Image: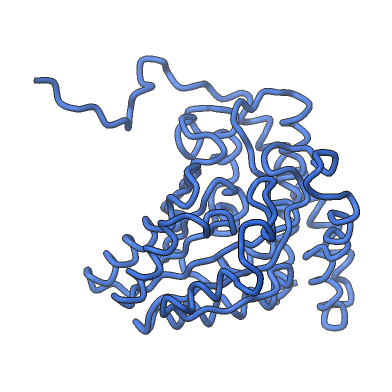
Length: 325
């Protein structure tokens, strides 16, 4: 199946399969000594947005970084090696799950500090303009990061200077365990804040990969034309805990019934249902892709385990060290 819509589903299946296997190994082996934030259930946001960019466009993300990293074309084996803390990892074993990078694929970096990469993406996009380059920057962040001051500052700066940046808010309703209802005044929204700052903004069903892709394509084209920044607020939901491989319906801040209701709207199943009339064999293709990607991730894990850890004599490579006086 070579259609664009089928490829979007295939990319979601790959991310889902990779993360599910990684979560099992993380839980059962305790060999990945890094906090992990899985995007299981949120695959449509990363795939839909990144598929609308080019290799030259830079994508940044926050702590939930595996999905955008892979959707942008990041190296899976380098990702896995990084989780195991190996020198061959994409951050040479120093960054872990929250500090992914593959600039050859246009994934410029991710960071653990809430909202950190929002302003960095704005700065990168501004640099593209000043250099006369037809490139854009995209920054992924959650609804919790939208409560940070840097979000408001970045919106204003990008709007004033018509910077070619696309802000992507993956609104999964929770900032760790704090629901949106206790953080945002009734009747307000993230895309409403952006519009008030003079940024073109829209709300999209973040579990509809085709709708996300169409909205992202329009946003990227708008930004690339030099007509200013765009914000996409994508309504989605994480199936696993905020951090780690487990579920958290027993923690008291959300119910199993709520999680089950969102799982029933699985973005992969929804996309397959929508494509079935066009591609009658889509269900068989999804199962074949799952089997293919299970083999791929298991092989990557086996190779990562055999790789060396960083040499302790070089642990400070890449770190800023002030000159001795």
